[in-house]
Amino acid sequence: MEQEAKQSELDDIVVIDKTIKPESEIVGVSKISDEHEVDASTATTHSLEAEPNNRVKTSSPGRLKTKGSVVIHTRSAHDLFYGRRGDRESGVNQIVGLTLFATNANNLSLLCKRDDPYAEAALIKIENLLDDIQRDLSNKIAHLNSILDNLGCVTIDFHESEDPITIPLEFGTPYGYIATRCLSQYDKLITLAYSAKQAGLIVQSDWHRYVIRTRTKLRRIFHLSNLYRFGGATRDDIAANNAVARAVSEKYGVLSPKILEKVLRAQFVSHNRT
Image (cartoon, rainbow, N blue to C red):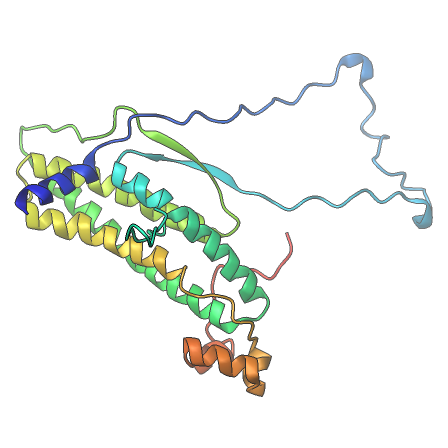
């Protein structure tokens, strides 16, 4: 058992050995040549003198998108990003990774906009747990940094991957980006804890408290997003206590009046068009 525990610990630390290259480079905007130069004081997109009925309406802008990337150094963080498919026949349990979490959070947000109070309740719980783990990660990282800074004349280089992996990001809601920040902090936590452990500054029980418990918390948050399935009940259904509302409440329980009355709202669900 001790040998297996050590092997499990090493598996969490083994770094990624390949890098995903950026998909493309941004194309620069070409400059207008001098011979095509126009007088900006007289040129307009639409004639100001034109009659309203004669003005040409251009097509509306598309929806806004936010893209980014994250750099991952450890295998544990990489595995948590992508998760694992379950297989009942072989007894392999599903692990909900950040990618599926982000998809689930997007679906919950859409249901919340359609006045599904159970979806909103799930998002509120996720938000609270994300807040908690962000504070926990910040405190643990600060404590490990203070330990590693107090080595006197000894200097230790923090353990990082020689070839970290860069993962492109594009999420439909803020929840994916918040979760990615947490995962990135968890990735950093592992490198700091491993450096401290190798220097003899923390012991195995500290490692379990810093790393293993944090990983468990992240997995629980991701898994929570996978528990609610669309029941079809709106707040109006629940107020009317119709058949749909009774079926959903029997499956998922009775909601707090504060959620039903919109006193408690999911903070990152917007009803505005952008």
